[in-house]
Length: 330
Length: 289
Ligand code: SF4
Image (cartoon, rainbow over all chains, first blue to last red; front, top):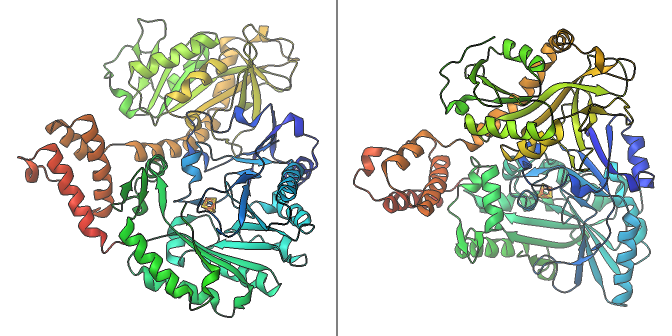
């Protein structure tokens, strides 16, 4: 799968690096000074690089934990995010990473312990308040987990801080590290979902919706709390029917009390990001819709957004109480 | 070898592979196999090309600066497109035997400046990769477990700006090692080493060509757009808007073509508005699938 690994020489002996070295002994291991030497440099081509991305192992020095942008999380909690990784195994057409980075190579920051130190500092700073920490902002939280082993370390850490919530946001079905342990009451495994037909066209390389739903059910059966994320909402013919049957497929046989929260959000891009994404996929229908441009934000426009919001809100209340449903606008 | 032929100045349209090679002895086997003819022999950097096989080649002479300058000269002289691949090819020293092995440099370091480059997508299924040091004078110490040449760093500094880093490649064949002195390198040996790797080189090119074709498809501007832009006087802003709405219109109505006769008396702005209206009218039955 991964043929080339660039590693910062300073973390050559780090336990995470060593573990990955044991997992990929035959890969071509190339020493580098700093990951910025090759990540996100000018004249890189995200789309071509995505065909055969390399893994870059690096050490992060600062900004381990940041406040979430407004509209990202549940407003009732103080929320932060952290990114132990940049970029993703999957290749969703609407992914903002393709607009943010010119590089599709994966950067994995191996010094997880420094993330956890920063998180515990935040917990101490807000002593007594419920804090939520989102993982998977610049990546998918679990997609790379077989190699990174991050989830296990994060869960060990959060098991000691029952007042702090961890949200793992994912489209992955790599849930074995979760199933092997006792469910953690302060961890939410949040799955991003779209109707199967839409996901098939837009969520390239990600597991099918059927497999994601299957993973959700395995996790809830094992006692894990689940988040359902319908973000971005995609407008297409018969969207009401498609979303409606997606909801009933997910909820069928699912204990509603295991659903921690449901959120949904409109498809929106900052103008520059939209341009970059459309430039990478000029022939895809996602980028052929006559989107509206309001103050530098490209969207379906208020009329469609409101239709979708109203529909989702009313449909979802059939399955769970209103206080578990949130609209996210990022 | 070859005579000057009438390859057009805009032949870059058909060129898929641009070779930047230091020495004539390294270039000759490729000039022959891809049937390239000389198209520029009056300047410091001779250029060979063949539109039919899609290859162009410049002989840079030795040194990093010359490699960068020759690549730029080739780019400008043949007006090479942004989807063409750039390949720095030649012989190199290596820290271990045997000679004749072919490598892709996945990390190129200038010994002089310390700058590092990471050209190309890795072609690991076809050839092994190695780090390469570009030195300013011939290296006989082979201190690092790496390849040694005198051009690649200069090439890597320049070539990605012509297309992109993923279409920039450094491919080297080992000609000397601690056990095989560089003083033994002859024109004949160079030819022999390269000819032995021609079939591997052809496999590599087939792989790179897939990327070139994909980029060509992504970046090409359809003929009917060019025709309209020739026929109507678009301002720069309107040209951008026209291309953008044409893209959406074409994705929405893939079987339709722009009919010039429908717009004969139109102003550029009116063309844009008409296409916008058609795309918008279709939006209520929109199907993203
Ligand atoms: S799963 Fe998320 S992070 Fe990964 S490509 Fe898709 S949208 Fe981007």
